[in-house]
Image 1 (tube, rainbow, N blue to C red):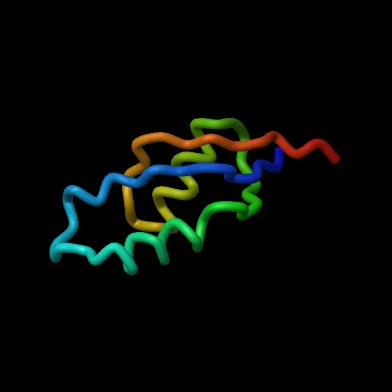
Image 2: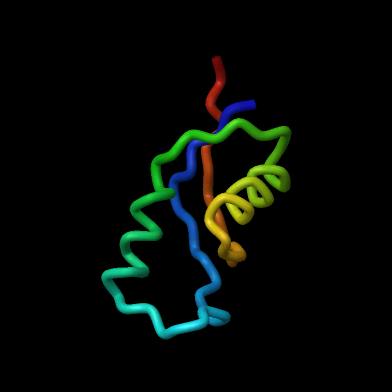
Length: 66
């Protein structure tokens, strides 16, 4: 199935160095609006966590029907 990320909140608490607001915004901009292929919502979270290197606190997405 295809999913489009509409909102996402990453857990930056474990960052090795403090991140600036600009760095945090850049991470969000990289993922909001993106399309992902995944089996379900849980798999989507795993895919994005693996790609980004950040745990996800919350996520909103659309299931894109083809």
